[in-house]
Image 1: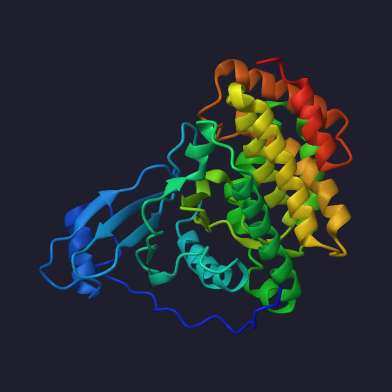
Image 2: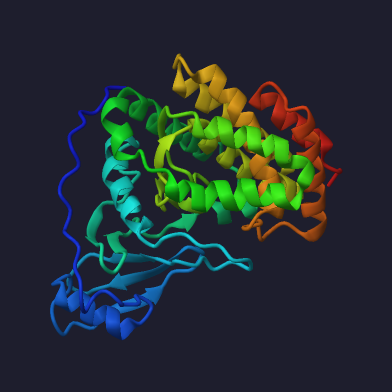
Length: 360
């Protein structure tokens, strides 16, 4: 594919202070008045405002207007909506705005929704709505609907983002140098917290964290999972970019593969189809990356990130809600066994995970 030309990010609307600063977008009256003030809606128009479910880190609402295209408004929360204490600075919403701007340069065409506005004082952003009707890919997979084309598209999208941002690394790396949101939203709640819960995993996680922080190769989405993919027809749209940074592409691979394997574990009547889907994802990603000089080392780290994330999604701050207590215990056992002797390749890891699970 031809590398898109990369230019400096356009100037975004400056921070505002005062009356907008304390707005809560889930307060529909306040949001409506805010949109009028900002001339994002005609003054006096009464739009339909609906809270969007599914996220733990943001307030997210959909604004349907009779005169303008729909707007998705997101506002980062300082304390995430989970059972344990989990904090992250709300100005990460501006990292997502930056991600929206740059991912549109690197991701496949029409897979990233446009950024419409950004308000730094209120820590909120507005973006276009993914075309309707759409559904989260997570919901589709959890009901056992496994589509090879979607899995290949999922792998291809990630490979394109990694490959193009590697080719443009001299421009992109300084812009996305800050990894503080990755630290508060991934390294601490997934790896460090899990090491506290399972002491025998500490040396594994310490080594993985050290390798991750030492690696800066590509843009890393940081939340690359079926939950953050909306399906419209045969097209996939990637959303939720607040953890994006310049770092180790292996994290994205391991994070994504964890979700595919965990669903294979849970959806017992489609386990083999989902295991095969995980294989398709791994092979198609590696083939799409091509002969990148870091491919082999990234695969080795991706194996370790997968194992680390599989354990973290049952004992970390954000356990997978669909796993049953028995499934969590089985996944904990399998992940800790794999930690003691990590497989050499992603395909070996997938086979090892599948064979270690109890028969459905």
